[in-house]
Image 1 (cartoon, rainbow, N blue to C red):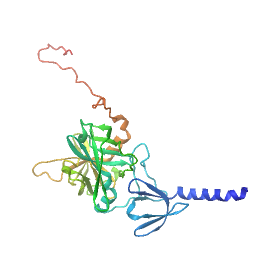
Image 2 (tube, rainbow, N blue to C red; image 1 turned 90 degrees about the horizontal axis):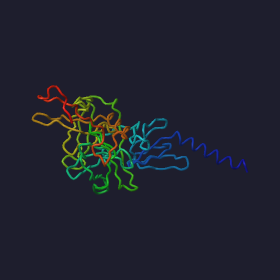
Image 3 (cartoon, rainbow, N blue to C red; image 1 turned 135 degrees about the horizontal axis):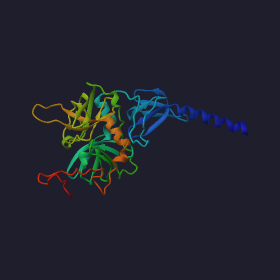
Length: 316
């Protein structure tokens, strides 16, 4: 009896060991499959799960992490964002197909902007100025069905954290239920290069899912005490808070502002992804308190002398 039971146990251990060193296939929508890729067809990926063979349609695959590769801060970690190694560069059109659903429209009673989903449970990044002073926030995501672009509206959106100094905000969709949101990974600032092609997706002037393409003009332009990415990628009102992507479909910046005026064209700026990661990792320090919308430390101005006080400090 002992010998007969040892065989399936040994097989189970062997199968587990194989899976633990296998490839990770992340699908559109945030789900992931772990197994050994045994065969690739033009339209299908054949994966050995250790206990069965699974065929995955190629157009459902967002990215593949090879066995032994590391993935920094996957979606389930406390940092909320993820970094995926091994993503291939694609054309802008192909990138829209794999990450377009993660770009959302953020609307308030006084205006609208853009944002993007960083976690399958519905965490969204946007600009602080898009939602400043507002509590009624709605989010619209766009899903491409077989025949049309479907709009899905969410009316219960909570402000999680705000960073006014860097113009960043973290939101949470509260009425998503069991919906698994398509999310996008964050790239690395250290890999950015001057002249690198990038593209933006957003809702300028309310025009949904508008795509623009350009290059990085400078990775570290200093404006009003902030280091921003300067890019020729065109952004307009409504693009604020939307993602700036590299050709691997990774977010490398948050579209923030542009310089306008006669002769000022192609001067657009995005918040560096390193600044965004710091904000997300330290979001507890930027936590939003609905009882005190201007939460944070505020310092009183020092006493001043008036012209006729004979050198005495002003009293309260």
